[in-house]
Length: 544
Ligand SMILES: O=P(O)(O)OC[C@H]1O[C@H](O)[C@H](O)[C@@H](O)[C@@H]1O
Image 1 (spheres, protein in one colour):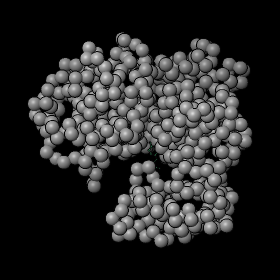
Image 2 (image 1 turned 30 degrees about the vertical axis):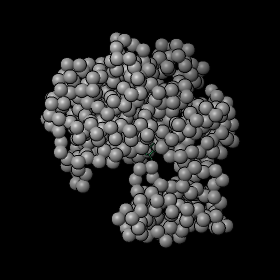
Image 3 (image 1 turned 90 degrees about the vertical axis):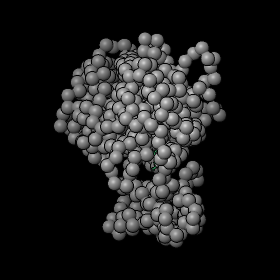
Image 4 (image 1 turned 180 degrees about the horizontal axis):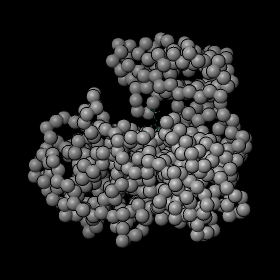
């Protein structure tokens, strides 16, 4: 299908700070006008330049002989800006002389998969892949994730691409943009790749359950896709496996996300799927984020299996298959989780940094230095398994749960999701768990011209010193990010956000009173840093 003619096919004279669009290993920006204070910076020409830059990067990377044309797949989530950005990406790729295969509505993990699928009929494998998504962010945002068969691109590659894009952008001419448009019109192909991807998921469950035709026969499983891209899971994965999916909700894509934010960490989203499970007396509930690289579940009693519980559950499954293996998690995981993984499951918990790419790269690194690890997982619901190419695939995580349900059924255990609930039995949970996000005012004179990052680091150093001299607190002996300390039967972690001028503070404690004591210890230490807005913490310690 041809890319729609661009309405803005003329070089822009506007100055664009491309590097500002970097968000760790993703690109994110504002694609839809109308929200006050959020001007559009992911325009069509900017997008076209970024896509052309990815094409140039890929050509350099693959260094192939000129007889072969490289192929790039493009997919998108349900956002309202998806179509126009898909067209702009297509022009950027086609204009650089590469072939474009559009998948339409797709999931992020499916896009990676298209780089390894061997199937000529579907123009696979592709050499590179682009997912147009901004995960759970508001409707006016959008962005890109990039893949090759080596996995998702990292921070350094994204920076490289954005630098190239800035250069390409200033050299756009009316003629070069028209030429890209012509090339896209004649060379873009459309493929229903999600059919292959979903049949692979179905095959994975068949394989794990001894090739029973309908291994989920009789199970009632409700899906909440939050109007993102994950609606396929009900009709294309669960139903072919025999499950009943009535009561599933928000499966239709709607980029205004009218029901709730598609995010398994979000309280309203979890409440919605929990209610659906209870209302339908379902055996299991499954929820995805917008682009399906994250997920969570709800058991038949309405117990949420997200955050630490999802990690505990996945660890139990993985440690059954690989006894003793190391589970790599992000930094905000609970002490109870460590006790569970190491005490009950006999594994090793390696609590690393926040950020899905950090966690995945760390697990890959551990394997490369001889420490076996099969699971890298974040409390956000990003989880990657070694057996699945270290890809953070929310749908594949849920497939692992389905395997468990189906195997239990095959061995005579009947009904509901008890088999999953039992796997997390013994996980100690704190009575109180809070996360407060404390903002650094970047225009405050106390920054003295420095960056918020430098300011945050100085603050953390100060907190570390204070913690070391406080007899009621014990600094965590191993810690990779921020300051983590135990005390009053609980713990706190103050760290710098990966992207924002924010210091997220996590506190877990056996009672409100103890949580307040931990909060007060942090509050006293950060007092000397007036650019930090501590009002949320002040309010918390006063009202709790
Ligand atoms: O550091 P924070 O602001 O809490 O954000 C951390 C989060 O950033 C992004 O959303 C990443 O995709 C997540 O993997 C990560 O957990």
